[in-house]
Every structure is written in C-alpha cells, then in structure tokens.
Image (cartoon, rainbow, N blue to C red; front, side):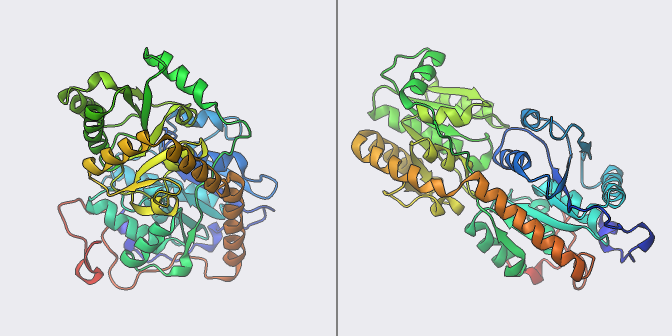
Amino acid sequence: MNMLLERKVTIDQSSAPTNKHPRPRVLHLINNFEIGGTERQAVELLKRLDTDRYDVRLAALRNLGPLYGEIAARFPSVAEFPLTSFYDANAVRQVLRLRSLMVREQVDILHAHDFYAGMLGIPAAQYTRVRVIASQRHLQLSDRRVHIWGQRLINRLAHRVLVNSEAIRRRILTTSGVSAEKIVVINNGLNLLEQPPAPQATHDELCHELGLQPEVRFIGIVARLREEKGHRFFIDAARRVILSTDNVHFVVVGDGPLRHEIQAQANRFGIGARVHFVGDRMDASRLYAGFDVSVLASLHEGFPNAVLEAMTAGVAVVATAVGGVTELIQDNSTGYLVPPANAEALAQRITFALGDEKGRAAIAARGCEFVKRFSMGKMVKAVETLYDELYTTRKSERNCLPALEGPVVQAFQPDGALPRRAKASGSEA
C-alpha cells in the first residue's frame, strides 16, 4: 500500500469516467453496520439522501451488523472490500478492487464514513477523477501510531474533511497541517419524534425487564464498551453513589471488548447486583426516557449521539467536559459537566442531580429544547450541499488528489517504526 501512495501515476484518460450519467454518482464506504454512533449517522443519511438528485451507491469493508437491515431495501447490493491488515497483499488487492469499481462505475464522489474506509478509499482514489470526502468523528481513535498518522494522511489527501464538531476541527488544524477551507463541520442529526417515549412507562418497562421494584431510580450509560468510553470510571462512580443513595441502579447499554472486564470490576466492588449489562439494543434511543440521569464518561469525544439522544428524551445528562460535549452542554444550564477520568467528581454530580429533582427537571427541559436545532433534515441538507459544491468544483479544478510535498508520510508502517518526517510534524497533541 505504501507503493500505491508513493508512485507518481499519470491518469489513464482512456479509463477516465465520461460523466454521461445525469446525477452526481456518490459511493458511500463504511467499515460495517454494527451498532455505533458513526454507523447510525451513516444509515440515517443513506435513508434520506435525495435519489432524484444523486445516484447513491453503497460499499463496506464488511456487510455485517443489524443496522444494514434498515436500508437493505434501498441498497440490496453492497460491494465488500474485506481488510484483515494494512500490511499484506490483500490490502493492496482491495485497494485495486475499489479503484477498479470507482473507475468502472464512473463514481464522482467517494464518501468515506470512518477511519478504515478512509484508509482504503484514499489510496484507491489516487490519480482518478473521484473527489473524496473523509469523515473524522472522533478527536483521536487511539494512541496507536497507525491511527494517529493514518488519520493525518487521510485528512491531508482528502478533498474535504467532514467533522461533526468544532472541537474536532480545531484538533485537525493544530495537528494535521490541513487548511481551514478543507474542513466542513456538519453536526450529527437527531430523529426528533413527534411522540417521544413516555418516561414513566419506559421506566416501568425497564423495571419489569430487570425484575426490579418500580421505585428504583436508574442511572444509565449508552456506549460501546471500549477504553475511551470511560466505563471504569462510571463503575467506580457507581460504587460511590451506592454507598450514599438508596434505590439506585445502574444500566449499561452496549457491548464491546471490555464487557467482561467491566462486569468483573462491578463484581469486585460488590455492586454486581446493582449494575445491569443489557448489551447492544436496537431500542437504545427509547431507553433514555426510562433513566433518571444519563451519563457520558468518555475520555475523549467528537459530538456524541448519546448526549443528543438523552437530551431529546428529556433526561438530564452528566457528562465529561471533552471534545464536542461542551458544544452541547452548558454546565448547570443544559446539563452537568465533570472533568474526565475522575470517578469522585462524576459520583458527586450524579448524587447532586438525583437529590435535586426540581433543578434536574429544569435542566432536562432546557437541554431538550436546545437539541431541537440538530434535526436529521438539517444534517442531510448540509451533506447534499457539500456534494453539490464538490461536484461543481470537480469540473474546474485539477482532477487528482493533492500530492504531498517531499517524502510521503509512512502511515502504514507497523507500530514499531516511527513514520518519516515525524520530527518535522511537531509533537503529538
């Protein structure tokens, strides 16, 4: 894959698209359709794009996950480009397959929805007429060099970088050497229901499901069980809250690699009977209405769906003041903010919110009103405007991705090796 990035290739005009199709042809590329914020936003967008204006196609690294069922009728065929590593012959093969598909199908715009889609799509689009939108929906995917340097390379080579918060935009500007004009901020969209779930009925259903008495109060967290979501601090905070508060139970919605470890932590603290792991739920957005307080314990975030969905359900949110969270929550006005990685502060804020029912209700109401501005329709319209702008400029600008100055950053090297030009790029934020 390095060779694909480093070679200087002349466009083969005989294989270049003729652009005889009347609508801009947009290929969406996503990692998979598992339950997650990125996947949910992509699926909601794909449901709503105007097919009279755009010829929309869909591809995935793996067509796995329950969310595909929601768009299967609209996209019955999904091309797959499975990756097992960035460092083997299969990676090169999948890049060439994707490139061939885009040239053959005369794709105008490639919309890569996540890091892995970007790592596949960027080299595949090199020296073709395809315009690339790379999405970054996180401040930092992980501390691994392949993720840090890979994201920088993706952002530098894409025609547009689509982010969902000002916090991510600022991070890219300070770490990636990307011009401000290239970055487009489009906030997540919300399904604003005319008839939201009834809080008491949802609470009672959850009590029945978990075999609990109706007077129980619920503190909920909805997130993949991964390190950056801060579940360790949530469980530690739960231990502290339980010591001082009666009839409170904690609900963990979601699954992930840390599930068994987090469950073991709860059992080790002696609170296993008060912490309920309900796994991935297709009705997760409905469950918020049954919580007394919703928690986001993340160590870093982009523009979290979990906060948006809790606020639209009319539930007070206690969240860590990271990334785009502060664009949604004003402390003690539309929610409660705490520093990240601080179980004591998190527990204190949860306890305070539970004890101030009137104040909590007022904050929940203000939060619910605030998030009405983030409609799904507004998000879709903004994305369509981006497509129109790219399709128009595609005809007048140079029809290839921008070349890097000097040696190409070796973003695909294994973690043991430092990328070239690392010193010139400055220190990591």
